[in-house]
Image (cartoon, rainbow, N blue to C red; front, side, top):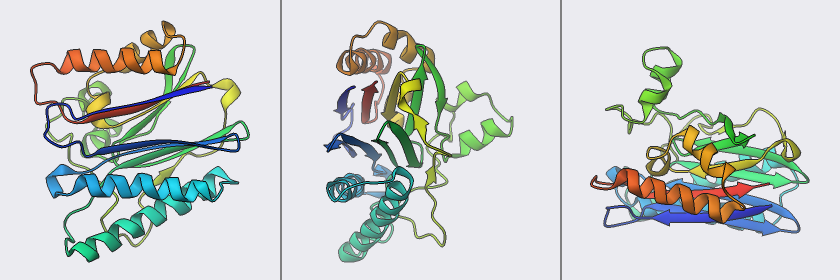
Length: 241
């Protein structure tokens, strides 16, 4: 297995994305987050998310589902606590996505519109569904899936970390996935996936020898497609099995 991480501020002054690739005793955890700049201090919230996963993973992760559930919940608590410390209840919000690979089994969780893609045979076979208004419109048949990328309400999120909840608002994959049946994973923020579609992800994977090469080629294409626009921060983690 190979993996690689990429982040870039785009055309923004600050990079409010954060990413981490963690390994311990042959087990792996990958996580990334996209701080909500419109609420201020998004970079603080995204870093808390990744730091929480790093600290929890250092203590061990015996079960992907329970580890993800407890760590998402802990990250939420830490972000809310930091809001109180800073007296900033309307700030410090972030999306988040995380993947664990333990004993040949993969699990993932997410909140917001940072995505995880699963590829096999050089094609995207599944992806996480955004917690956003355009995603709900696509699921109800109001728009086509491909229209999410350029929808005027694309930044209207229905779930994020940093908003108090009565019940957890993150989502977990339904079951463990056998990594022997998976070619690659891609975790990325919306600033990344909005600039490269699923067909190109697979086509570039086919040409790549390892995760670094695949990620470099996707990042270059994203930069090219975003040239001349007010590009958002864009961040991704590529994992090739």
